[in-house]
Each structure stands twice: as structure tokens, then as C-alpha cells.
Image (cartoon, rainbow, N blue to C red):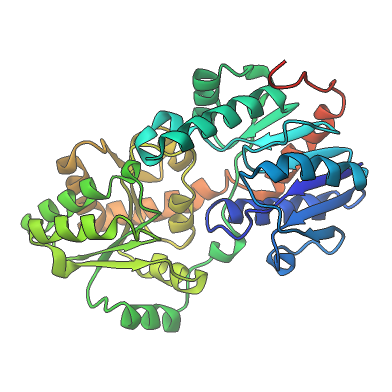
Length: 375
């Protein structure tokens, strides 16, 4: 069997990590198959798969050209099965296709995609993908239900395959790395860490209000928000200034993995305040680094975090502040959360994700090709 994996977004910090880890696990676990990895320009070294053919291309995502060129490429390389670890599939398919549909965030949270045209395109392509894919993979039972709800997809064709933590984050940073990152970002006391891009659903405004309540209640700490939040930073800085906490909040923007692991490892607590997540990789990364997790009780997050987090209603800053205070100040709670975090991680394995994904590949090749999306 010759399997193509469309990895043109492997350079992205979120979905790219999923693509890299899954591809490396699948190709290592089933070396009897042939693999074609479709990569972005200069992407050859972003994934380690010595038994795979790598094809670097300038074919852009969301372009009209890809709708013609990608099917030709698959035909030319005599591909038996395409796996797109993203929701985008060519409308004309020369072979069966699998897609990983991580979530339906822009349907559930339209404010995260301000462009009206962008929302229309997203909905059209998501609907086409759900109809054309021979099988769908998603990250959580919550996302499976949402895909059925918003896209009316056949639940029988959707397989939940839990992803896992990147091996790089599976052990804490050492003391020297922690000291270095504290100095680099001027972190001179205990701090709360939050990692993610800037979107309304990430609920950073709610986090800032909870942090203000926490400090007003006599818990001294800093708040560190990590991630590319360029368009939201002025808004958040203004709110922090208004709340009187600006001097205690650090915005690092994007950081390299070495610094990110050290920031996880040195944090007093990790907080995920989101109102919507399809999975929630960052809570698992924090647990892997031995950091207690305080987490929103919304959407997929309880499914992922299990008994290894303290939960709060993301619309209630008072609840968030209360749970943060417990995780910061109560040593017994902290010890329990850290231990539960390590146990929780045992539920998530790239080896198991690869095994389940390969099973979906085999199922797909036994099924007929679907009718065209707009037939």
C-alpha cells in the first residue's frame, strides 16, 4: 500500500506538531508500506521518516491551484490512499482519502474567524471534507459529536484517535534551563502559565480578571501568557492596565520549544481558561512537565484532563481565581494534581494513535470511493 500524507502545514506550531508525531509513529510502526510525504518548501528536515519519500512543494493551502495539482500529484505517484491531517481534501480524488478533522471551531466560535468570506469558505470545505472522506479521524469524543452536530456527518465513519504529547515534552527541563528562562523573561517569583494563540475563545480577558481577583485576595504571583497574540496584545495590555495588574503580566509571544518546556517546568501552575477546545494539547504538555493544571470545564477539556485538573466555569472569573489559589497554595492538592497528571498521560500514546490510524487506513481501502461532494 502506498500512503500519501499531506504535511504542507507541518511548520505550524499546533497542527504541525500533530503531523510530525503521527507521521513518525505511523511510518515506524508499519515500514512494510510505501509513504509519500507532501511537505512545504524546505520542509524535508521537519519530520524524521527515513523509509518515506519526501516531496517538497510550493503548492499553497486554500488555493485554487491545489485542487488541480494535488490530484495530479497523487496519480503520478500511484498513491493508494491519501491522509490529510487537516480538514482540506481535493474535490477530485484519484484514490480513497482519510482526513483528520480536529474540531469545528470556526462554526462553534464564528468570532474566531472575523472574515465573512473566510467563514463561508471554511464551512464549504468542511462540508465537502465530511462528505468526500472515506473515513474521518478526530481527536476527542467531544469533537466527534460536534462534527455530527454541525456537519451532519455519518457518525459511523468517524473514528476517535487520541493524540499524545510530543516526546520532547515528556520530561521536565533541568535546573539550568529553568534558571535561564526565568532570567530571560524576568520571572522573579512564582508564576501562572498559559499557552496558546490569541482568539476570543481562549478567554484571556477572563483570565486577566481572575488573576486580578487572585492578587486582590492576597496571593502574590505573576502571569505569563505564551504564544503568537500580536493582534490581541494591545487589547490585553490595555485591559491589564485597566485592572491594575500590568506590571505582573508577561506576554512572551512565540517561544522556541526549549524555552517552552522550561516555562512549563518552572510554572507554579498551568491554566487553560478556554471556552472551546477540540482537544487541548497544552494541558498534557504541562502535566508531562510536572506542573499542576487548573482547567476550564468546557467542551473537550474534562475528557482530556480527566481527574488530573481542578476545574472552573470559564465564564466565572471568581471560580477560576479560587481554583488557581488552591493549586498555588495547597501543597496536598498540588502533590495530588502532579501525581494524577502523570497517571493521566498513560491514556495517550503516539504508538497507540499510530496503531488506530493504520487500522482506519485498512478500513478505508475496503470501502468504495464516495460520490463527489456536490453530486
